[in-house]
Amino acid sequence: MKKIPFFFSIVLTLVCIPFLSHKVSARETSSNRRTPTVIAVEKVGPAVANISTERLLSVRHVDPFFGSRSELFDQFFNDFFGQSQKQMVERPLGSGVIIDEDGYIVTNEHVISRASKIKVRLSDGRDFEASMISSDPISDLAVLKINSPTPLPYVKMGTSKDLMIGESVIALGNPFGLENSITTGVLSAKNRTLTFNSEYGDIKYEGLIQTDALINPGNSGGPLINIDGELIGINAAIVNQAQGIGFAIPVDKVRQTLVKLFNFRELNKIWFGAQVEEQDDSSKGIKVSSIEPGSPADKAQIKVGDYITKIDSKEILDILDFEKYILKKNAGDKLYININRNGNEHKVDVKLEKAPLPSIEKLALEKLGLFVQDLTPQLAKQLNLWWVKSGILISGVQKKSPAAEVGIKEGHVLVYVGQYRINDIEELGALLKIMRKGDIWEVGIVWSDKFGEHQGYARIKIR
Image 1 (tube, rainbow, N blue to C red):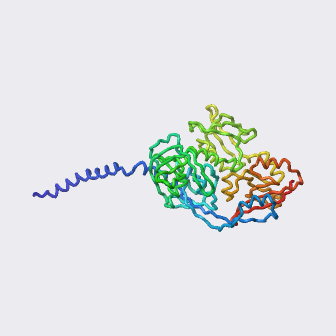
Image 2: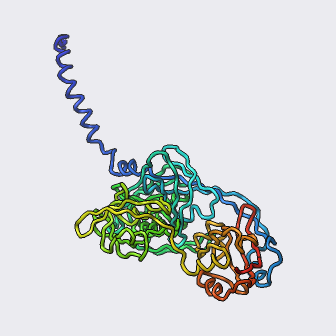
Image 3: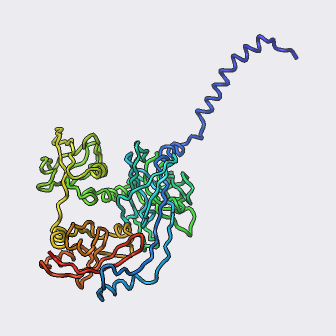
């Protein structure tokens, strides 16, 4: 066998190297490993939150803080204050997803219900303590807020209008506390209605997405996304007796609930004074559908039919953008608003005000010195009063008022006035109208704190 001269061997090597390197790079670029699933997970993964909570299961006992109790009040509490329970702290794990750069997180209400402390860990290892914004146990959704010095990664919301049976879906979350896990599958069915038992009663879900992507304990509250990395649902439930059957709340229903949960008038008592509605073409902004006479919007001469396109430097594409932005403001703040009126651009200034009190709330303040609102199921759970089905939440107490003098405080819940069980604002209003200055009325109150769940009874003098 002849040997190749050294000179020719060098030439062959130099000639072959480009072909070899071309062959390697071609193999790399044509690799099937970097699938659409990988790309979608890389896009959404940083926006997934690992949620842990601390819950105080309090001792139930009678607290004679306000003195002797009435017979009616005794009867009411005999059902709730029986044997005492041992105090303990749970630390359940769940998931959530960041929906904007300001740090708002959506999760299931049952993940954070009755939590005394909520902690969030992101995929980059950063830890935050989250605050509760609002929740809705009927829809089983809640909004949390974390504060970061820099903008946070967030998921883009898709739509559930065009979901296709059989399309690929990905569930992200923290099953069994295993952070940053994913499972894949297909969309198995739409519009499922299921009822699940919980320690707080039955939770009924309607219009659910069904998937065979595994959803395990700890996935609750995490995102279900499509192959484009868009949020199409919030993981909510599993069927314990079956494998490969999981359910998520569709994103359009999530969006509808979020509009209610970000209601700045209800949460911060801020008055803007315009009702708005979304359009099919979101680039037009949101349309003003009605104006309250005398409101800040009315004073700024905003008109029905105007399109709000921008507030300050924030582009407004839907009602959720509108609610979230104003929620960060306070009464007295000024908004600089761009509107489109009949094709022409206008700029107006709106100075926000405190929302005016309805007539019943006004009477409660005048006669008792109380700021009041209906006790909703979500408020009851937040206050660790899940066993109280209805009542009037004391949201504030005026100094040196009749209520303050007998020790009533913010966070107490009014359940009895005189001999009447009070379920809502309307029932309280009927009694307020017959109260006269100098009258003495008996009131029954419940509340919860770190020492347990309490009841109290007082005699209050009407002013």
